[in-house]
Image (cartoon, rainbow, N blue to C red; front, side, top):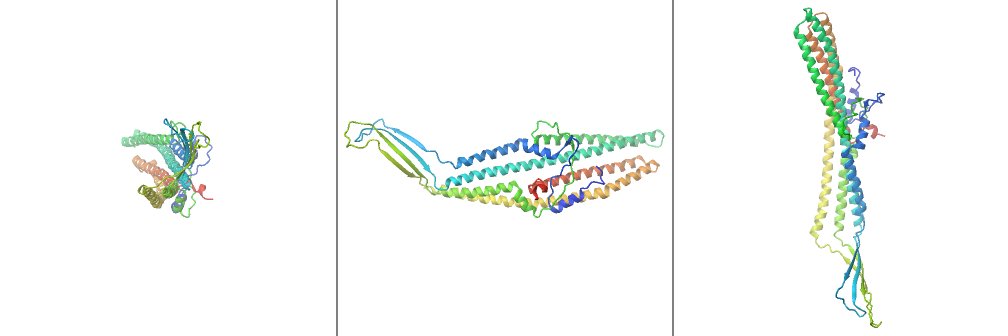
Amino acid sequence: MSFRVLRVVAAVATVALSYISPVCAQPAPSDTTVLRLDALLREVEAANPSLQAARLRADALRTERAQASAWPDPTVGVAYQPYSIVTARGPQRAQWQVQQQIPFPGTRRLQSEVAGLQAEVANAEAATVAQDLALRVKEAYYTLYRVQEQTRLVRRFQDELDGFESSAAAQYEVGRGTQQAILKAQIEGGRLTLRLEQLAEERASAQQRLARLTGRADAEGLTGAVRVAPPDASPLQDPVATALQQRPEADALRRTRQRANREEALARKAFWPDVTVGLQYVDIAASDLTPTMTGRDALAVRLGITVPLWRDKLNAQVEEAQIEARRAQTQLDALQLDIRTRLGDLRQQLQRQQRQLTLLNDTLIPQAETALEATLNAYSTGRTDFLDLLDAERTLFQLQMEYEATYARSLKTVAALERTVGIRGLDDHNP
């Protein structure tokens, strides 16, 4: 990647002014070994165990709505009388009864709404897990990108250093150079080998993170080349309002507040009695008494109500629901404050990174390239020594490495902005 043609500054500046940027678009590569970010995100959606568990919990809670709105089960009873009570018609043998409790009107509907809102809260929590996982995938992916580009720079420096070492050795053999130059080149080569080992360790760690996030048993298949493109930013009119609308955490808190309000209404229903209706049948044995003596097979209709006598308990239930509603509203206010401050912090980070990229790309790297070229010309004519040449090459190398590190940080900042607003990218959000 040429540092003179990287076109990230304008895009990152637009992102900084608009508070937000979309997911870095992946160009359509012809190389089948390219590791694509969009494919990894789809794999997380389909196979991450934590996300699947969160969604299954939401599915399980959805079944509670039908349970909560169901009628109470009726009760059927029988009483056998070993010592019969004799009636005018004959002895009583048994009593049969069936009863059905009828909740106070509106109770079942409120119970259904409370259960439904609980399921919606769980669904929003699953969406939160999905967005957190997407951010972690992007961070690991951009780490792979940085490692890939820095590894390329280290190997290029190694190739150039090999040439410098050969030149220093040749000059030493004819008496024009020093052994110190050769040793310096060898030490620098050892440092580059160590840096490659460190980058390989970072690559393996990022690949293992991606394997865990995508539900894979190992990192096999995560070794392709990484491709990123500068973000195409589109400003949002009000990022805080967009975040409160899009963030699943905000939706979960709103549902929690609604559920608490329904629970308060349900608790107030408990101040009113439920009704129990029933039917009782008394089995009377036949006898030889005269027909004028009635009493056989008595039938009774029963009616009863619950008496909500213990008001302290009922008042406590109402108060608990009211406190829960206030707690949800307070958490929503805290989330809004967190979003606002987080957006401001990320904006400042992105502006600083933009300035650093501009300084590196437009000033420091071109100056280092010019200095290296001048030093190389002076070295070839004997006007400077090998150590100056090595220092000029190392300076350019370090600036190039810093550019890649800063660019990767800016990509991660963009991903954090997307997570803060709760969207995958502006292309997915804007009409």
